[in-house]
Amino acid sequence: MTRRECARRLALRRAAMVLTAGVAATFGLAGCDRFQAPAFKGIDITGAEYAKELALTDPDGRRRSLAEFKGRVVVVFFGFTHCPDVCPTTMAELALVKRQLGADGQRLQGVFVTVDPQRDTPELLKAYVTNFDPDFVALRGTPEETLAVSKHFKVYFAKVPGKTEDSYTIDHTAGAYLFDPEGRVRLFTRHGTGADALLHDVRILLAEK
Image 1 (cartoon, rainbow, N blue to C red):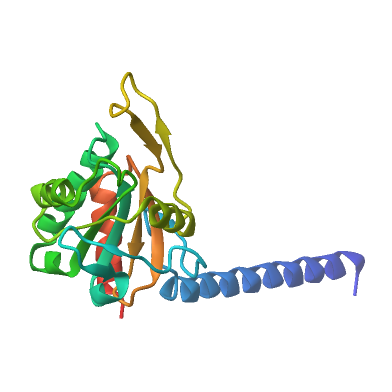
Image 2: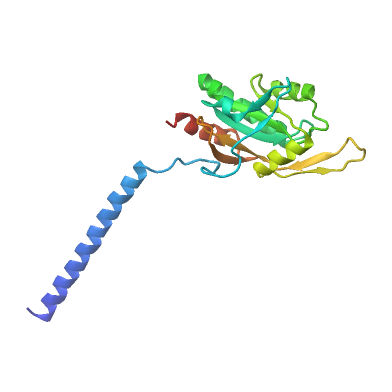
């Protein structure tokens, strides 16, 4: 065998190896696509060791927990009724998503947790959440309970003094947690993502088996 023939065979062998590797990679990726995790718009926190439980009192004096909402996608948002923008926008988007789901809207549960128990009385909270949707639930705790729950959910909040004692505002985490129908925390969605993104993620969670 001449040197030229040897080089030619070596080149053909290398080309065959590259082609084989490319085909294998293609089929491998195709197989992965079939089992690819859902493409959420929000931040996937599946398996998180925080934001696992919530037990506070509703405006009617009933102790509520996330366990009672099993079978529904639950969206938990921490805010306060005097909030000028983030809170009403978030709640309005959630109400819009529920309407857009049609019949499946009954499987979406909104939960509003106040970080301002000092001003957010049970009566005010009830009127606030039902203004967005009559099935949304408002929860309120003592200052100590509020602090404990916020820490468990890794939610920040801090009072910002106003011109008078009662005119303060509150800086707080602008986002919501999504729980799947099995009661597991799955997503954190930031404020400003929009109703379409939330609708997309809720539909994925509702479709899971």
